[in-house]
Length: 294
Ligand code: R5P
Image (cartoon, rainbow, N blue to C red; front, side, top):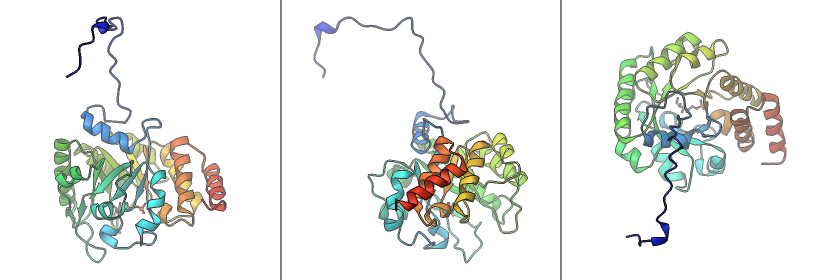
């Protein structure tokens, strides 16, 4: 019990200062509970309002992807440069030091491998385990137009309900099947369905024509998906355009860990996302860090 302090009788209630209600910095997130907003602050930098997420969850359906053969060797050295890490609980428990201070976005759907129909996913993590791992969010794949569209949506809504119970945001990832057109119309449909049905943020691909309409019509933060490996300047340009057109960050995997200099590349991506560095300037940063062997 605190001791009585007779010298501290005078109190100042600042009666002339109205209580300040501070709006939360992320789009569509004002009505979320404190725990969820706090978890979001571990993913999105409250200063810039944006995030650089490093996606390393590919093994959950395609095994040891190029660049992820040894996450202890290839990924752990990059951890200090990402705001958040998207990964499976297997990789988190086995390989990521528990001293990691960024946000973890836990892959919570799975089932089929690349040898089968990919949309045939189920929820693959109990929310209690997500809590035990102290994750900042969970993530689930949505297959709009895919064979198992309804089930993927149901996986998401179930996770949203559980996430609301425990204060854990859900990231919906808009997966695109082989036969689907990757255009703004498709992604407006997919991202809007995810947000309407409760996802607190959505990961989607960049399209050169109309990305700003996808961002505008989605009432929650959009994170740009990286996709297959591109030349560094193209990847930095895509990230720049996505941010410029309304994305709240990027979630890139292969464009970082398959780069010739992953550490230099993730720092160049940070420049684009957090400092709005122009693509050429970010490429110069990449080249100079690479030349210094950093
Ligand atoms: C599944 O589609 C996941 O989102 C991926 O495993 C991963 O996050 C993709 O990252 P990237 O396309 O940037 O390599």
